[in-house]
Amino acid sequence: MITAAALTAIVFNSCNQGSQDPFASINAKAAEEYLVPIRPASEGRNPAWNAFARKFLYAPAFDFKPMDGAREYSFTVKDTRSDAVWTFKADRPDADLSPVWNDIHPADVHLTVEAIGADGKVMGIVGERDFLRDFPFNGPYPGKANPYREAALRAALYAHRMPAVQSWKNQIVPDLSYCLNAYPCKIIGATLATEAFIARNIPAYKDEAIAMARNAAQFLIDQSKPEGTPLEFFPPTFYEDEAQAGRADNKGWTMVMEATKAGRGFLELFKVTGDSLYYDRAIKIADTYAKLQAEDGSFPVKVDFITGVPMNDAKVTLEPLLNYIYKLEKEFGVTKYAGMKEKAIKWMTDVPMKAFDLEGSFEDTYSFGSEPYQNLTNCTSAVYASYLLKQDNPSKEDIQDAIDLIRLSEDQFVHWDYLPDDVTGVREIPTPSTFEQYRCYEPVDDSSCNMVNAYLDLYAITKDPLLLEKSRALMDHLTILQNQFTGMIISIDEPVEYFWLGCNYITFTTLMRLADVLGE
Image (tube, rainbow, N blue to C red):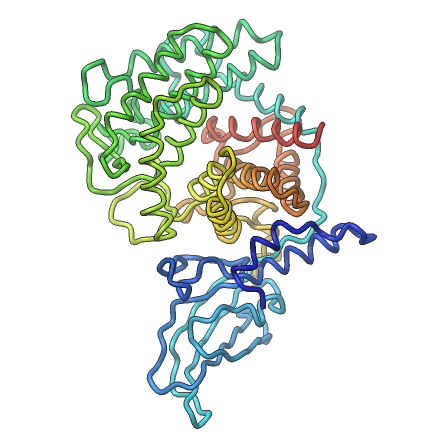
């Protein structure tokens, strides 16, 4: 069995290029990696993180407690749809399932762990668990429907041509017939970034795109809190009553990390216009973050939009802010937020990484009172992995943390294939795809992009072809899903009015990145 200590060596070793079938060695390497459990509680680094997990790709280990007098423990895994059974014994009840993991075919399974006494008889059950033994990576997958760069430009144009986006030509308020415009930082911030992308990459649309973006930016400025207030220069998370903006626990509140998305939009608009108004706004947003940061480096999830008083004592993970600071440093040479960055990284290390609890906060699903690990999401774990990996000369510890986060993200959210429905025999979810979070357990385009960006950031260091093939498989699938007439890449399995423009921006920029990596 492979130990966790050996995992980094596995990731850094190249696949056997001498094989006649390159995927034979790539798939074998994936299978080998899946035998290594992800930060099990038995290591002592963190509590058991998988109490709410529904499925596993990597051999899981569960926090079952020993029974007094037990000599060993018997593990039995049963396929709930057939008579298939896999068994092994271990000297502790929290052992991982690697002895049989790669023998278990993809299936909904039931695990029973029994204590065995000195006389060889069963003393009792110490733990049971139902879960999906998910499909492993097994390439090759269907190729792309269109070149990545072409798919990216068509996806951007779809967003640009949306009636609610076109409405910015003639007005400085959002068209709420597109209900997600009720999330100004996220959606209108992404509108600025999208139109800036159009202006850079499609010259024929440049003037129109900039004019639309300027009007959208003016709305964000007009809605921002004035100088001298606790949240000065922050645009709101919520506007009017559409979507979830009118919910009682959203009305009058704002989510602290959302202003980074508006700031990113201002920066992208500045790059194509040179207008310092937008750069200054982005800097002022960062300045407000520096004022709001607690001494321990933390920020609340949600605050009163007038007073800045937190709704509760919940803390938010800081990958949005850290990536915002990174953008200011790398693209604009702004270094004055080094202190804020250092405190934020320390808090991330001391709190969520120590607990290995990478939960998310979303404007449409957030609630207070969750148990630890109840809403894990790749939107935190994969994105923070990318942040760690793209630093100059990342440390061995940061690389290992990033590998663990990528494995967690794939384990819990990537579906390389999907079991057919019991009744219809139809695979109801198109794959390969990536689900967003436990509370929105559906495939979302930018979640696949989160994985791809993390894979590519690790690939830049290791040159491991498995990472590249995983990236291609996920992005190829998005080009297949793309509407060949309109260019739309669906965000989620919901009506078109729930097309998430912010997700779309991440998707087409990730398509462009993969095109650059592959020299397309």
